[in-house]
Image (cartoon, rainbow, N blue to C red; front, side, top):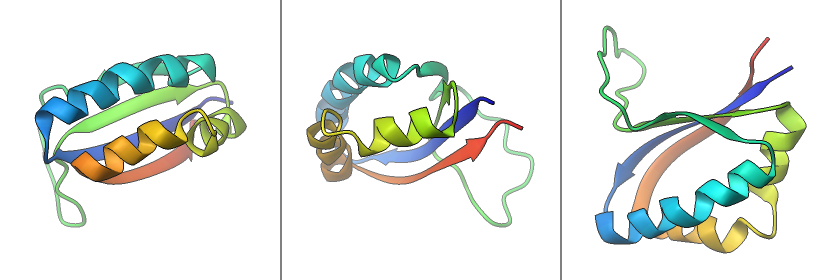
Length: 96
């Protein structure tokens, strides 16, 4: 069953974040990730619990693959770039 990594990002350093995006994509793809949404225009209809900023959705073959990507040694230094240059909410959800 597919799983989706969902990230809401407020970018604080656009130049460094562009570098993060360039490095993260091939690592996500190595774990079977396919980018489905990458910061497109949003039509927010209700935001009582959460006001999204910039949404990224990556589809993975399953929960284990998404978790392996996020927790991988290969992604760790790239993840640090994201943490240093953006404020984020990240979660993984089953596609069931």
